[in-house]
Length: 231
Image (cartoon, rainbow, N blue to C red; front, top):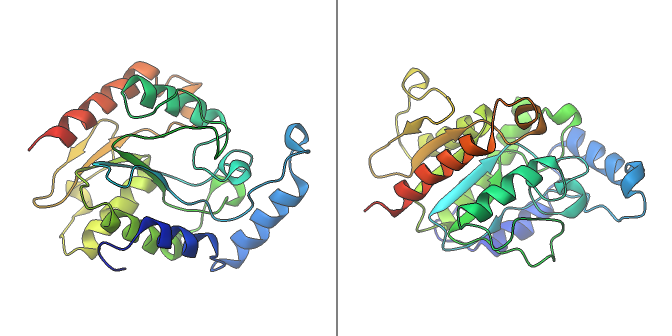
């Protein structure tokens, strides 16, 4: 976990990871069996790396790859309903070059933003185990440290929030859970470290029920923009 190491090196090591037997078996099964609407596609079927602007001031942390989204396409939040909500919002906010994200080679570019996740392999029932999250955490730590201009971390959901706090703790920050609870729109400041901003996850479970609306998420992104520009 060297400060300043390249994102390319981290990606190479992440893609080759086979640390969690349950997840390795599941990701390979999903990639082999597929789902009917994508049966003619070749699934990525490996751990999914982060992507975006290496000079980003904003890091977005999600939960895990979707079985027939990122696990299929090889790019986080790409090819499923979560991405269908996320990328139009990022485009409206000026972070994404286009409002759609369909594949790794669709021309999408992120400006001033890097997107990552708490877990990099698709988990059964979208629920990574605590030990699997711990095994994956060093990759997030390394990406965080490689983003040398980082000012704001946007956490999509409570698991991402906990992962971000874990990075801070490894950096020597004393973080008490009672003082940094997850809540949509919450802002957590730690002197000398990136600001943590929370949002409900952009999952279909939240967006289809109205728990998270486009207007709500636009407001969070406006806050992120303001905080990342502050000196």
